[in-house]
Image 1 (cartoon, helix red, strand yellow):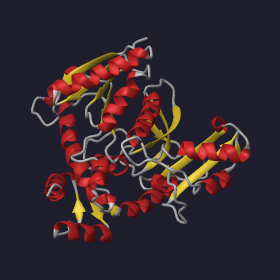
Image 2 (image 1 turned 180 degrees about the vertical axis):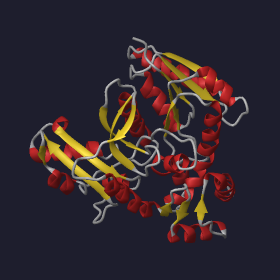
Image 3 (image 1 turned 90 degrees about the horizontal axis):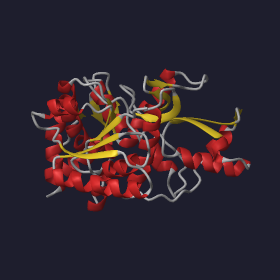
Length: 357
């Protein structure tokens, strides 16, 4: 049986971790490793070929020179015709900002992600090819903004998936069962993870919905009690390996012929993350009977303020919170109030000039 092809378009830390994980996943016959620098793509491909081969995996991994800002990109993408495309471009990733010691609300950095993702979106729209697009640059927010203003990613990966192993493990320890027997259903936005995977016990958590069962028996009270259990976690480069694991879980579902229950952020126009059923046929938000979609949407919308966002309108306009506006004013000398795909490039350039001095 022929397996699908995957194009990894950005080769930062997360894209490289995704390449290494995908090479060992047995999900793809062909993995295209793309970069503006063919040498970089060849070296990353060679590393993945060697490591995966040692472990007995030999997909066809090919390096490709590809620049999504070039006029020829739409034609190149049509010629490559990948079944799945993974992208996580950013003008400056979060871990680099942490290294520089810059402390702004998370929303303040959104232009650094949206600027490139909007360029890629426009190019993919011109290519008009049937590709499942996994957009991993702050997908809880960026994907909704793009999909509300035109073409956008099918889904993201990451934050809503990543606290779940902790919850399953701690519930299992409390009840004396196997973690595999614990089923979690979670609605949560980007900020939630940082309060759950943390050595500090927080009194208040970002808005969320949580349900836990063991063999059909509701154990949500136990799951709620373990959320605040201290859990030391490295928010550094190693974090990208965790997100790559979330990416492979997502791709296992997205490449399945039959629906698979998982969690995904940034599904279409929806903010935040949800339980879903995913397969080659698409992605369907799959909530427990006790939750309505409007209730889940309201929870993720209410969580935006924890990232420094006041609102994201139906037309895709991001409105910064007062806290973010004040922080940007102190940092830049002026404070933009909103962000759109059309204004993202200029805001990103202004931020980069200030960040780099």
